[in-house]
Image (cartoon, rainbow, N blue to C red; front, side, top):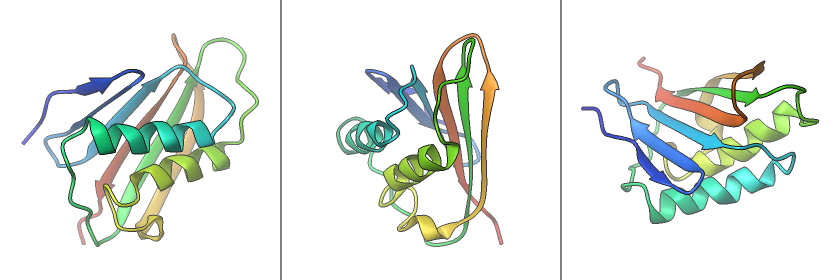
Length: 120
């Protein structure tokens, strides 16, 4: 079952037909901890309650930037985003068995993420 996008401020998210969680944030900051707080609050206040899963997960994160890439460590960005999903998508980020984090030029600044259970 697919849900429409739920949006609040700079964050929007939805569940896809396959049951994956797709999240997009507009804008960029080099303060990666900002994303952890932003998304935790979004999931607490605005997004329909998710029941955390217990198996393995695959997470794909993309930092999109317009022009020069911001000075940001992708590993720190990934940690903040995975922490924001803990307790919402999965119980603990140790359940992430596959992680792809990339930076690419785009027409706008933002973060995109897809988290899905790995069928086993």
